[in-house]
Picture 1 (tube, rainbow, N blue to C red):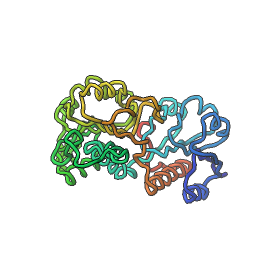
Picture 2: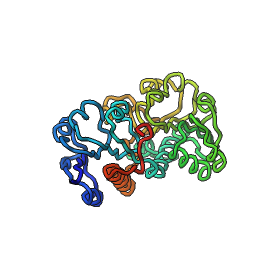
Picture 3: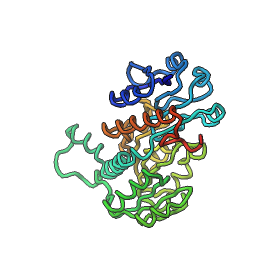
Picture 4: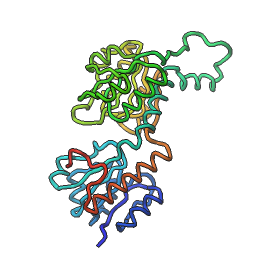
Length: 322
């Protein structure tokens, strides 16, 4: 008997066809991701779930007594209640590596856009303020030959370091729980404590996964350690930053600017002070949002799902669920 799976968001037809070779499919046909209240109603006897960001907790598992596999279309898996899933023997998978280069490209874009004030000056031109040679009050800051600090040197961090080192001749520092010896040899990056990295860097990029240990890892103390001329970039998860502390640091000039792809609450609320700050570049959580990368992520998630349901170890089993 073929396993039954539920697909909780629209995926490319090729991905759906691949799953259909091995499984019986039910799927959400509405816009975006299926609302949680609807998902709880329809999971029923599904053995597999293909989803993104949905909280996998006791409530959801109680609604799906036959569930065996949850496949995230995401590199992150902070939506997994690992303890509850382990207790039920639920397999969880994610999609790392396939998006590393795409996210790294975006991070460099945020660095350049924020440092050279591209979004701000685009608005300046569109509003008709450009009447001649601009004054130094609108000058940006150089990126080349400066110091980049990366907090969280995983696969994406290494791709960022490679671009910064060889593309912009930046000195690259990193802070990571474990040393990345191969990256140090290949890229010439230098490991630092978090305090040292914050004090030395002209640009600080946060790329840690969201865990209990990294929740609000950037707060008042950390921003106070940064150079007043430094720029902060976050393309990891919004909850890794104490957003009120970031707003305060920007408002008081403790740091020069910020480039943000993620926020404490998403979508970001219209009254959030970050949206009124000219020294902040804000984009809508688009780290992996290219057509090719999103296709590759969905196909990898489908392969993870099918392999696990067939009784094989999936390519990207979440380590904590082994």
